[in-house]
Length: 291
Image (cartoon, rainbow, N blue to C red):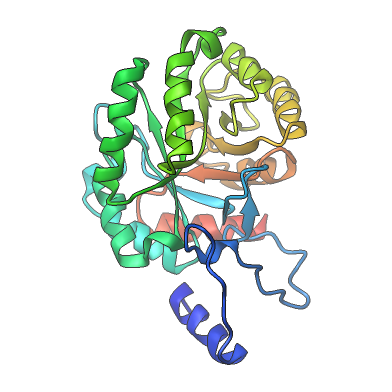
């Protein structure tokens, strides 16, 4: 049974139940159904809340940026991304992870048209460090994604220890966009331990995308050091999303170990992995459940 069939069956079982829409008209803000005997199981499709943002999404996000740079990625180059996103949604994955540099906005837009904008969570990322350009970028992202709001917008690939002062202008642009309802939450994607520590100390950061895996591949520091900083973030109520869970391929043959580590770390609200085909996507869902 896919997600649409499940929702139809659930609605039939509940009769003519009325669900009050949120400000964004999303069913994600309604309580989930409790299934007796199943509460202890962890699923990729579990509904999780990202820190204090109030944003509810699936535990596993569908990454669209494997080897993503210069406006392309493995997912976009294959030409099957729309089908992959819609198929993932039908399996219960409602978190779409995209970025300007991946070139995947058009495919995400096409998928949103099929599944319904209010029923999915979209995270994108901005590479520009110039405030004027960043402001123009956000408006462009809205057009490319075919939406009037973005759930999460991040400053992408930050490495500088002083980024919270150096890029204050861009942060102000994001704040203004949130006030205008163009984005729901803002944050940062960190690519150095110095940037991560600065993010932990910044009240501006509502969501952090952090690199985490048990072997330290493509991470900001060793796993123990990173987890220590992320615990500080969680104590402040920041939403934490893990990336590089498989170490950018370093743990491709040790996927179960990597997924168990992500789940057992206790510091991630959600995590993103970029499946490249439907079989990989379904395998990830099964592995999370087994872990």
